[in-house]
Length: 161
Image (cartoon, rainbow, N blue to C red):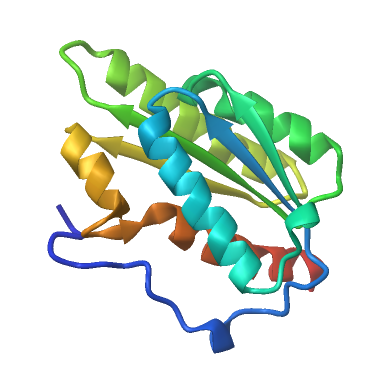
């Protein structure tokens, strides 16, 4: 794993844009909630620590990872967000279902980034084991939700620039 032994969630606040007037949408998968809730908390905390008011963060829950593109599209159509973060977790099982879900979500979000004006940030863990997901959602490899929020702040500034 490329992140083995590294916590990649550290960032320099001085390198981030002023976010006091920015608005963010977070679309959260209810599947693997133990992981997605940690990712959500990491993202929300990072946004708030960087000046985003709590009332400028909108959460939309969807059933699973495959539904994330639809949720992101619904928020993007409102045209009131500086960026949207999709949060999910798909863990490898014994069938090819993992491959189809991961591929569908990835292609769906990539497509939305091309056709929508609002940047949509991909925070979907696609791990081989539950332990890998735990390690990447607030464990020894940091919190990918935090990293997604940093990206959302930067992309929101590009949208507004």
